[in-house]
Image (tube, rainbow, N blue to C red; front, top):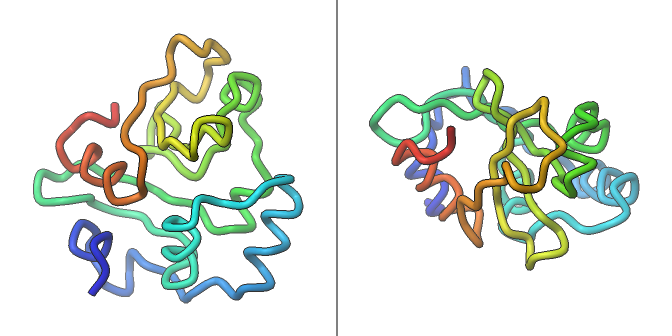
Length: 136
């Protein structure tokens, strides 16, 4: 079992079928950069996720590779964040490709880099931060 699987509820209502390598490569091509390696491995196991992270009930909605490539929230993109999901509310989750793929949160309506909050330097650290209530 992967480290991330221990933090995510792995029932079939919350996880998705795996993304194919072709779908991920196409998304990376549209983004113009590779996805973080550990997040990429997650997508190869579950092409997205929606539900609790950890035991405290904090939610994350991680998008599919196609949804990530589509973008759609101008503010965070202007702040340099590539979004990979949200908390189901006003907070976006993503990564900073210029800073060794650092995982972050940012208000979805914001383009202010000062509102970026670092949650971890790996996908598992990012999930742990959400599980600990630091993602909002």
